[in-house]
Image (cartoon, rainbow, N blue to C red; front, side, top):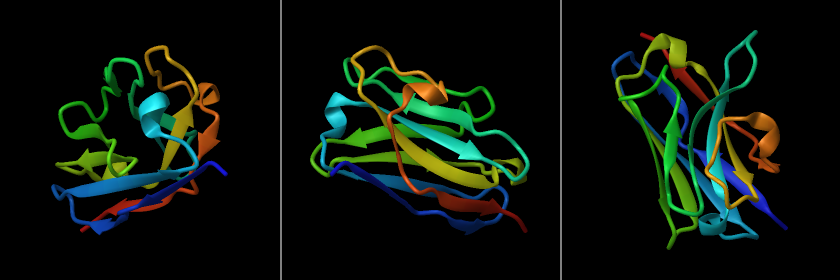
Length: 125
């Protein structure tokens, strides 16, 4: 059974850092495009970052570029989202997702087949 489990969320002060983890089971993350999405209260879910399966190319949304970094650990079958210089507007539920595609990853929600349950990130003083 394919499963994604996010962890690492929490409360952090503005300017702080968090690392989100997405542990996969039932499949190998190397062969899937992996993405991170977020949904703030009252807003639509948006793509934050993704990493491709074929060439490990990445995409990062302009709103987090230079602050967030996605990475993949094949040995642990886990994908990470390193978040630095966090801002209050980064507050959201963060979701990990997997897409069964060999094409470069995108931040398009409907292209992803499997989703985790989400982890809350709150940036506040």
